Image 1 (cartoon, one colour):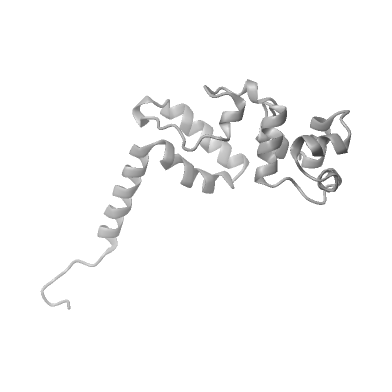
Image 2 (cartoon, rainbow, N blue to C red; image 1 turned 30 degrees about the vertical axis):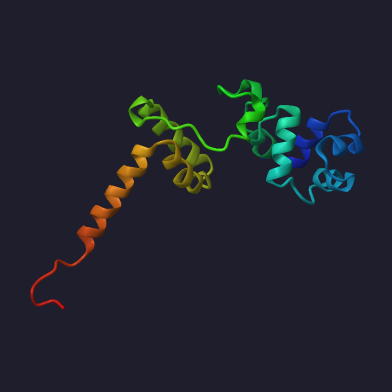
Length: 153
C-alpha cells in the first residue's frame, strides 16, 4: 500500500520543506505533518501539488500510474484537468462499451469506493445513461406499485 507521506517526499525531492511549502502556499508545519503521516493534503492542496509539479493525484494518493500528468491521455493541458467547470459529454454510442465495462468491473473490484464515484460521475459524462437509468427506475417503481382498482381508496 502506497503511503501519501512517501509520495510527497518523492515529489519534494531535494527541495527543502520550507521551499516546498512556499511553492504550495501552505505553512511549513503543514508539510511536516503530511510527511510524518499525521495528516494528508486536502483536495485543494492536492490539486495545487498536482498542478505545480504536473503529478497525477491518483499517484500521490494511491500509487496509481501514470505518475505524471503528461502521461495521462487527455486533450487538456495538465492544469486544465482540475480547473474545468464541467466535464465533456460523450455520446454512449461513441464509447467502446465492452472495454469500458471490463475496465469498470476491474476498477470496482480493486477499490469498491469507486462505485459511489461512478454513480455520480458516469451520468454526467453520458446523458443517455442517465436517461436510461431514470426510465429503468420509473419502470421498476411502476412494477412494484399496487395496481389501482375501483375498490382501493
